[in-house]
Image (cartoon, rainbow, N blue to C red):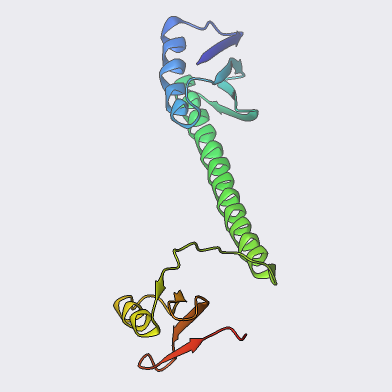
Length: 176
């Protein structure tokens, strides 16, 4: 954290400098140590004026307060700056959240637009067996709806599938 204190018509004592530094530590939790604090203290009539600005993450915040007590003016400036930073952070968080929701919705709509394309490929072994053996094997695998196999008698690839009633089976045999 970099702090620069300027005083006009008022002496910036070590106590005032330490107080400004201690109070500015409250802003570090929002930006980390990469923060520049500029403080100007002066008198205008009977009032003490504290003008503070901070620069961090390409953002700039400013507060000016006049009070008869300089320490109270510094406290008020820090409160104002912290409120501005919190408001900005909340606004950015909401923007990021709505942006991520929008991106997710776009991804869903992109998925919905895909048609007439192969979107999933499964690989498995085709083993020689009889249609009855294929039916038994398919019954052992309730998560599968079909099973491709090579018919031992014909040497051709067949498919046995489970019908919608989940009790009966269908068989697809190639012609010729």
